[in-house]
Length: 173
Image (cartoon, rainbow, N blue to C red):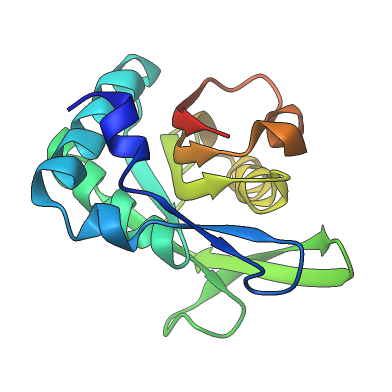
């Protein structure tokens, strides 16, 4: 499948979750086995050069792509969740949202010193959540090998928040 065919499997939903926002709905892509398979293959091809040793998948749609990508690359996957959602000891980072603060957590044993982590999510918009995840990796002594996204909203310039780590993003708007 071409990138344009994959783009055709992502639907625009105007005024969701609030007026003025055009939500990028990935569920049609998930419902299309060949499209989903091609998405994972393209992400894997783009990320292989990053030499990651682990996948960190960001809640919640990042779990879908992170799990498939971890399987394809033969890497362990760890969950990045909102505060209070992990059942074992966790480490946390606070980060700024447009209208306040939030927290992300990973299990305390997920990030190992000097290990290389590929951070995966469905969309990069402003880059705040991905940047906070990268900061959490570095705070725990890990290395951000790179970032992988299905969609990049380039008009929000989120890439700038991610520093020097390499990025693979398949479809841009």
